[in-house]
Length: 120
Image 1 (tube, rainbow, N blue to C red):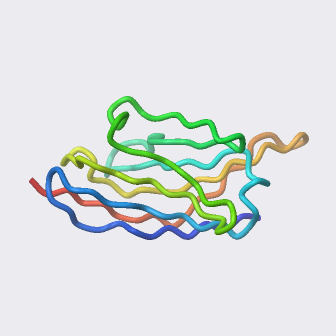
Image 2 (image 1 turned 60 degrees about the horizontal axis):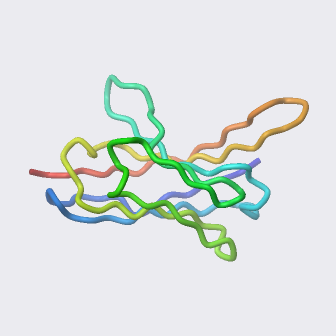
């Protein structure tokens, strides 16, 4: 069982920056990938950025060059630095941890979500 606690959301103006944090209850090297998703009302949750156990990252096209995902293994924390924020970035952001189990397949764990609001 993995527990995730996010922080860092809030209200920011167009073009501003925010940093999100996600603290895991376990050593993040035991997690195959950690990611940030976001969701707005009436839409499906979408992947924003991911960092694998090996440190590889990938991003949703609309955030490339603006968002950066990183981690601090000693602090069991994954971060997402968001810059040049736009109103379309307004959403609830969720931290995700995925562990691949040989018998049970992929197991996903989620944080409680943190709201990011970008005003124009």
